[in-house]
Image (tube, rainbow, N blue to C red; front, side):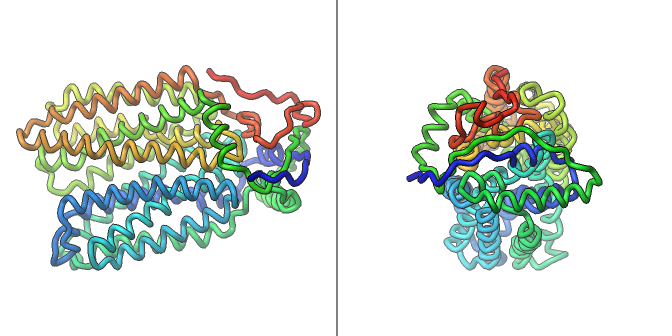
Length: 495
C-alpha cells in the first residue's frame, strides 16, 4: 500500500539533464552497461558448449533434449528474474538491486562451472538467467535516470548493443577452449563459465561507486540524500569538464511516497498509456523473432547445409556487425530522432531479412554471413532502441517493472516459442537437406519486424532531448504546472 510522506518541489531532474559529458558519466557507463557483455558471453558460450556437455567423459552426459531444456530454463529464469527484481527495483531502489542482481549472476555462474550433474546445471542456469533478467530492469532504470537528456538515446542504444561484444568474445573464446590440443575438454567448458564470473567480480568493484538514482530518492522521501548526491555529481562534473554549470529554472512538485502499489503500476501501464504499451509490445516481439529467425538457425545452417566445421569466426563477424551498428548509429537517435530511426531500422532490416529468405538457397557461408552483417547492422540499433523506448515512455515509479515486463515478453517470445518453431524448421530442412524450408522463419521474422516499424511510425514518442519527467510525468507529481514551475514544459506527442 502506498503511503504519502510529504510534498516537495525540486529542480534535481533539470540539474542532472543540463550536465555536460564528463569522465563521471563514463564511470556510470562502465559500471552499469557491461551487463550486456556478460549476457552476450553467456548465450554464445552455452550455444557452443553443447557437444562438450553431451560427452559423458568431458561433460555431464546430457542428451540433446537436456541441452535444449537448459536453454529454456535459462530463458525462464531471465523472464521471472526480470519481473521479480524489476518490481523490487521500483520499491527498494536502483543501486540495491543492481548490486544484488550482479551478485546473483556471479554466484550462479560459479555454480554452473562446478556442475556435477544435469539437475545441478539446470538449477545454476535458472539462477544465472534470473540474475541477468533482473540486471536489465535495474540497469536500464539507473542509466536513464543518471545520463543527461541530450545523451540518453545514444548511450542507451550503444550500451544495449554491447551485448554483441560479449557474443563476439564468447565465440572467439570457445575456439581454444573447445580445442582438445589446447586444453583438456573436461575443464574447457568449466573454465569458460569461470571467466564470466571473474569478469562479473571486476564489474561489481566498479559498480559500487555508482550512486543511487537521485530521482528515485526524492520521490521516496529521501530528498536530503538526493540533494547531497546531485551536489557531489555537479562538483565532479564541473571539475572534470572545466565548465561552469548554469542555474536551472525548471522544477517539479512531487507527492512523496515510501512505496507504490503494484495495482497502481499495472493500471498506469495498461490504462493511462495503452498506446505506449502496444508500441513496446510490438517492438520487443518484432526484434525477438528477427534475431531468432536468423541467429537461432545460423550456426546449424552453416554446419548442416554449408559444411562449416568451426563456426566461431563466422559468429564473431556477425556479432561485430551488430555492435558496430548500435555504436555508430546510436548518435542518430538523438539527432534525427527516435521515431524516424526506429522506424527505418525496423522496416529496412525486416525487408532485407525477407529478401534473404527468398534467395536463401543461393547463399554460401561467406555471403550469408555478409548479408546477416548488413541486416543486423541496422537491426541491432533498432532492437537496442526498443529497450530505450520502454525505459523512457512510462512514469519513473513504474520504469523498472515496465522494462522487466516487456523484456520478459520479448525474451519469452524469442527464447521459448522461437526455438520451438525454428528448431522444427531446421529438423524438417535437415531431413530433406533443403535449406529453403528455413525461409518460413525468415518471413515471419521479417513481417513482425516491419510491423513493429509501422507501429513505431504511428505511435512512437519523440523523446529525443526531453527530460524523463516531460515524457511521462511521475505518478506522484502535482498536475498544476503553475505550482510546479515547469517552465513551460510540454509532454512529447506521438509522431
